[in-house]
Length: 367
Image 1 (cartoon, rainbow, N blue to C red):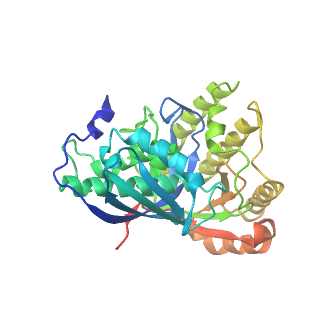
Image 2: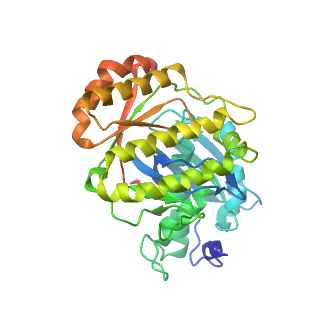
Image 3: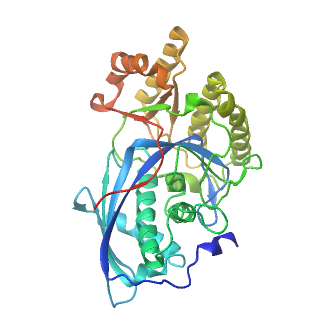
């Protein structure tokens, strides 16, 4: 099995205690992943923009211990969060075969988000991505030779394994290790694509997508009524699942020439269709549910009107939540931000929105 290459038999250096800190970004899928099988494997391929300003910073402190089993505490914004610890324990159980030192240390996991948690901005993606990078930093120290450099297969082993581990915590987290455009899931037209980890989109990318903007309109900052995990599970018996998986694969195929030639009209059609298809799956599952809010729909209609009257190339996408990601070329930033302030702010909770753009992935933080 390909994942066997991530199993380490011997570490060359022993650690006693220490601290590592990494930052990982959120990401916004253009072609959506919704539905999984096995151990966090995607039912369809997806592709996402890596973001820059929406990120998680995680500090992992460790101290060698004698007792068996996992020993850790989780803190969010300086406050102990025992509610997150079962998910971290499940994550550790899944990855311990690949990072066996997990049972040798007592960990303190301190996390800070630059955006609201559990509101549809992929906080689990950036959170698990940052934690996976911290663990890989520890492993690099114990191996004493592994970095971002190429391994014997010519791949970036550090980033690839970090993405592999992150996926086992949260599927979309595997797209938060690198940037700017990341594919997850096997696709016959995308070389190197894999179900096991995210890979950088390998083909030509038109300059218009190089610094694409994403302004996130915060319709609802509260925790989602239905978790993404439950939503994915409901795809197992969904009457439209097979058609949806084919649609996602076909839409990714359609984006390949778009990324090369910069056809924004086609980009808009595909991206907005994907967003609505994602929520259509939620509304037609059993039990059915709706994560969009009335203000979500009002914003979408305003975006359509703005595009029709001005010729703008701004478009929307949605993640598994009520917030709206407004995507547009950098050249339109001034006009779009004025449109947001004039027309969309009243539909955002407390008038809040986040200005973001395409980013390059995780980074190590200074001590």
